Image 1 (cartoon, rainbow, N blue to C red):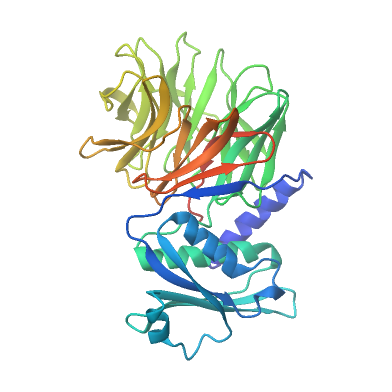
Image 2 (image 1 turned 30 degrees about the horizontal axis):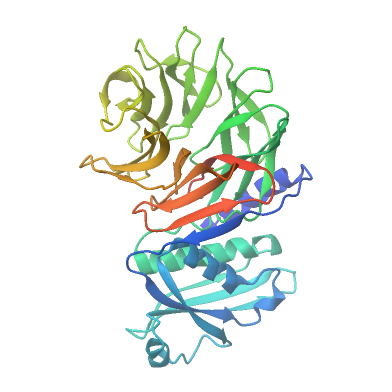
Length: 425
C-alpha cells in the first residue's frame, strides 16, 4: 500500500468514526500577521477544470502557502495546460516558481489530480504528482501538494496535511474534544462530556489521543483510538491523574500522579500496565514531555519555584534547563530536539518562549498576556498555543523565529488545550 493510500485509509476511517457523533460545528477563522524574512515568490495557477471537484484545490494551496509566511503569492489566473510554459514570462512577473495542475472527474466518482512545480529561473521541473482522491480527500490532496511545494522550495517538510486536536468549551457543562485539519477545517468531535477535558496528546502514529477527563468527578487519564473509538483507562490512581504524553516509540506514556501524596512523574505502558515512578523529589514534578531521544523534560518546583528540568526516561538525576525568570512551565521539545518551547511568567504576563537548547538563548514569541499549552508542528517550524483576548479563549500559531503569527478563532465558544499531530506515515 502506498504512503498516500495509508494516509487516506487512516484519516478516512478516523474521520468516519468521528463523524458518527452527528455533530457539526462552525469552522475556525484564521487571521494572519507578519511574514518570513525571505519570502519565496511563487505563482499558483488555478487548476484546469478544478470546478468539477467539491473544493477548489488551487485556493487551498494558496491559503496554506500564505499562512506559512514563507511565500509571496503571485496571481496566475487559470492555466489550462501544464505544457509549453512561458518560463521567461513568469520570471518577468516576479515568480521564482510556478505551480500548475489539472483536475478531472473519473467514471467511478473519484478525481484525477495532476500537478507540476516549475522553476522559472532554471526553466526546469522541480516536482510532479498524480493523485486520485475520493471526494472526501480532495482537500487533503491540496494540502499534500502544498506540503510538496514547501519541501521542494524550502528543503523542510510541510505540515499542511497534519491534524490538530483541542478542547472546545461551549458552556459550563459542555466540553468537546475536537480533531481538525491543521488549518482548522474539517472539524469533528472525538468526545463530548459534561465535565472538563484537558491535556490532549497525540500518539506518534496519529491514530490515538491521550487526554484527561473529569467524567468520574476526578481527573483520570484515557487513551482513545480515533479509528475504533475504543477507550482505555491509562491511569486512575488515588488523587490526581494528569498530563499524559507519549514516548517517541508510542509504546509508553508519561503521566503525573499524586497517589503518593505529592505529584510525581510515572511511566506506564500504552495499555495501562507496568506503572513505574521515574521522578523523585520533595516537591511537585509534572508536565512531562518526551524529547526525540527519549529523555523527559518536565516542570518541577524543587528549586523553590516552577522551572524546567530534564532527566533520562528511567529517571535519575535531573538537570535544570531554565534559569531566567522564576516561573517556567509547560515544556515541549521540537521533533529535531533542538528547541524547547515553554510558558514563562514575567511582569505578571504568561507568555510563550522558545530556547535554543544548544546555546541556551531564549526568545519571547508571543505578545499576549495569558498563554498556555505550547505544541510544535511536526516539522518544528511553528508552535501552536492557547491564548486569551477580549475574554475569549482561542488558539494561536507562531513561527519559531517569531515573524509569522496566526490566530484561530470561532464565532461561539472557547477553544483551548491544543496539541499538534504528527506526520502521517
